[in-house]
Length: 134
Image (tube, helix red, strand yellow):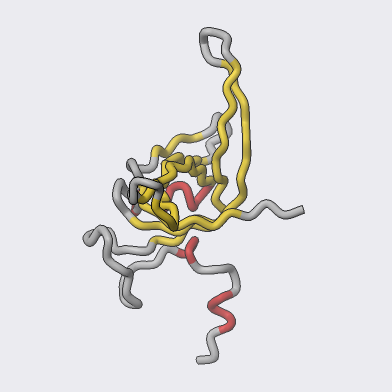
């Protein structure tokens, strides 16, 4: 079985960083992802997808990402359910990120990151530095 999601979009709000009772960091934010086609009125529609990031990567996202920033998310789709205070059962779908790549610089929303700009270690696959021939 396969459960893999890859998204590129802009954050709709700053990441919200929290800690579990055990002290594990977790960040939540929403990503606006445009659909690759227009509707019957000629308008491009957008989906708003909830993202969850854990541990060190959560802290990095909270420190360096913000509303409007362009990011690529790789992870898995997960559903969970909960009960509201008034007793209603709710189900939410969210992407649990394994990897977050920042696609623009902090100072320039909408720009493309260049080679000399900061790239958090979470955006580089494990072992990638070992593959460099020089």
